[in-house]
Amino acid sequence: MPTSPIRIIGIDPGLRNTGWGIIEAQGSQLSFVACGTVRSDASLSLSARLRQLLDGLGEVIAAHAPMEAAVEETFVNRDPQSALKLGQARGIALVAPALAGLPVEEYAANLVKKTVVGAGHAEKTQVAMMVRVLLPRADAKSADAADALAIAICHAQHRGVRARQRA
Image (cartoon, rainbow, N blue to C red):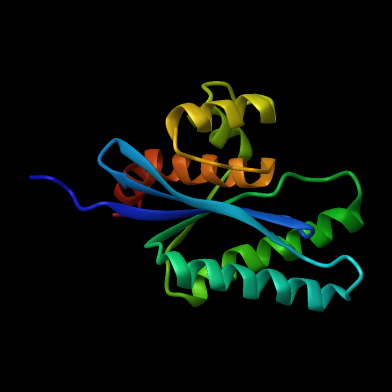
């Protein structure tokens, strides 16, 4: 019996640029839907920038109606101030789909790279290349959008295992 396609949004959080990518997964078959970047204006206050990210992600979710969300976990940054700001942007990346009622999963960057490229320490260019191989119609114009598609691909590959672990 064929399964229904699942629409997934992958989110690569960042305070300046938050990448997003949407795919459909039906069994092991993946197809590209859309991708892009939500940008915040660096001249605004932190709260205004976070609001821009929340509003932008909300618009993307409303326009493309994903059913599940996947967000990349934040790696620890040496600069505590930068790590804190990234963590706040990541909070927005987690809450935007949650406000829309979507289940949200989190994935470590190394797992995303290992799933998409086969190596946990792959370079961004390798990730972008494999995203183009796996999703030939994808038109990611930024590394953030390509990373977001990779996160969505990772979720498509691991979502069944995670569901069984929770059960």
